[in-house]
Amino acid sequence: MQISDFDYDLPEELIAQAPLAQRDASRMLVVNRREKTFHDSAFASLSDYLRPNDVLVLNNTRVFPARLLGERVPTGGSIEVLLLREIEPFRWQVLARPGRRLRPGGRISFGGSALRAEVIEALDDGTRVIEFDEVDDLHSIIEELGQTPLPPYIRRGATQLDEDRVRYQTVYARERGAIAAPTAGLHFTADVLRKLTDSKVKIAEITLHVGYGTFEPVRVTDIAEHSVAAEHFHISAEAAERINQATELGGRIVCVGTTSARALESAAVGSNRVKPGEGVAGLTIIPGHEFQIVDVLLTNFHLPQSSLLLLVSAFAGRELVLSAYQHAVGKRYRFYSYGDCMLIT
Image 1 (tube, rainbow, N blue to C red):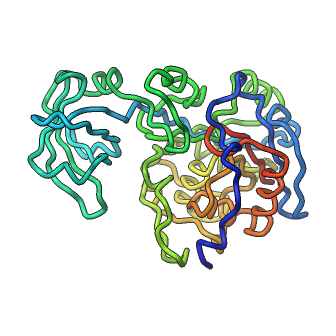
Image 2: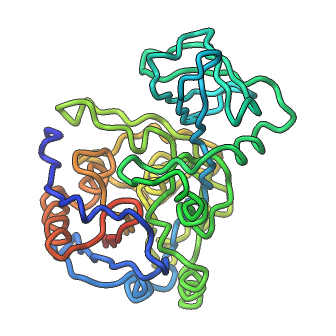
């Protein structure tokens, strides 16, 4: 299949630029894979679609302020750095803009020289490796100087970022390490989670640190040649046991977001079973993938021709998904990270 087969028209005004005042006020398009139907609903009604002994799988990764604004030393030219991955203490793989001006040996300062770094290497994929000068608590300094790394389709002025520190984060975020939010989880509140557990839905928390691979553009024509960069995940013994027992108890695995789905499918050791522990989600999920774990998927609306749209299409079928997207456009749903959601059963 061609990546062009996963395109759709989206009016720019439907790209949500800000979260709703209330997290759980989003609309929800419910898609039935078996019947190949969909209907309009609301996220607040999620419990109506779940059953006792269903296991709701949440990705509890926490976004850190990975966007650093700095300047080249000694010229003073502006540089924007996105921290992608900590290779070892003080050494990071980064995306830089403008990257062509950052050559090995170049120096960068951040926060009026509160933090400095040297460019160590320019990698073949266009990223850079930088090494920060040693400081007492690098992570704390990054927390202080950094900005929330919002997707490029969300436009912000320099003074509009404070709210995003809270709202571009799930209410159950705990494990620091993501550069993007698992956005399907942004709709949840403590009250919604309480209502679900009161109705005998079980919760399992896993961790997948969302990296650049999740939103990196698909750069091939034939989707069979596409590969999503690996991301690290952790599934505790308790979470694995709860997931593995779901089918025996008559429940389903309900994944909140494509990141949870990718982690579980990467950890699968047969139908309806996952292996606990640390792992690398190196799986690229495209149509033709046979899902081993995921029964139900809650997900936001994704960019055309993106790896996330490929994953959703693998789960529900390309034609059904694109028909649902066309319906959502016609009904003026809100799209992307701060937008509305789909529940695919």
